[in-house]
Image (cartoon, rainbow, N blue to C red; front, top):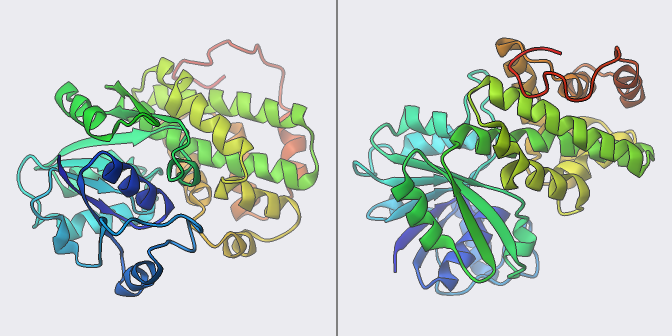
Length: 338
């Protein structure tokens, strides 16, 4: 039995807290505001993110950041843009060697850092791991079989996380490719947003399959340019997470994309989804990061223009279809533009 604090009481943080409780751990679930904590405590339910899923009374709900003291594992489950500020708040609390598991997906804007890189800057005295994969909170919280991958530069840590989190319904694989696991989980949100736009426009299955396939190529290009292993993107955090996020209505990125494809603005779509749409922020960061490392990502580039420069989605599709002729696999997994 371990003491574990989950920082972030959104859908994913809540689902992970419930999963850990099933493994007989002592679990604390931290909310960013007292108001949010009180609302969840009142009904023992996250009515906004996980309606209908009751949170067991054994999970301690709190808005006190000091609750992460004396924990075996601290799980970061905030939206990606809140990871740095949350890490700053606990930097003076957590001890040397504290295990931090990040389950947030995104790339930090301006710095272009992955979440593990952000955590290493703010918590240099801690041991960092990341977990990702095809895992909708709505399904994990209802014990639907799910698999994820945990990555760290220490096999001791990945083995510990695997043993601590794994249940009969939640299978975990291990990896040493932190960057690959993180980038897959970040860029797939952009591709899922684009798939939603296709659905909103009324495009067919052929179009969506093409977008997902070529999106995987772009994801792999960027990853390998940053030192990731190409094979990671054929795994759970790459193609696995890509499939589930691009095809499911649980995906807030896909739902926001559908609204954009139907003619709503980016702001209108995000307000209607009423949850953080990570793909919007990740698109800007991925586009600027790709430019920085000189990697061609035409889908991400067109999505950037749609989201931030007012380009018509139909014009973006036309631009992609009219690109110069290519060999399908030539240079796909090299750090070059093709």
